Image 1: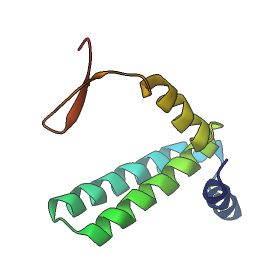
Image 2 (image 1 turned 90 degrees about the vertical axis):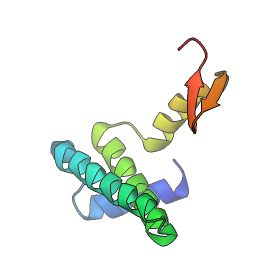
Image 3 (image 1 turned 180 degrees about the vertical axis):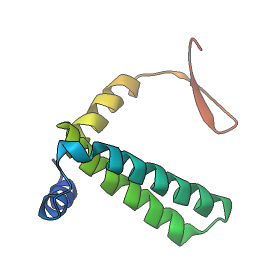
Image 4 (image 1 turned 30 degrees about the vertical axis):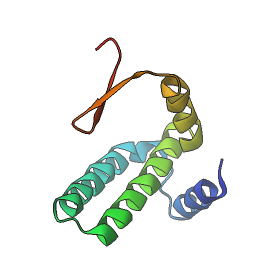
Length: 99
């Protein structure tokens, strides 16, 4: 686990946020942060975009801890799936070959 993720997990544990029974509220928090990010992008508010991206990462680290799946492991797993993926970008969206 990266040092920053360890700090986030320690912060969450100190605030009793890592209990697996709190997954639903944490998922709702992620959706709230996504809404804030969407609004910031719509307004081209760079500071708020940065803040929202960071907030979402914090929430994902906590959610992973609640589910027993460290965020670093989830990211490594996802990257191992995409690292050799081929395709093309259309209108800013990557379309993998075969779709």
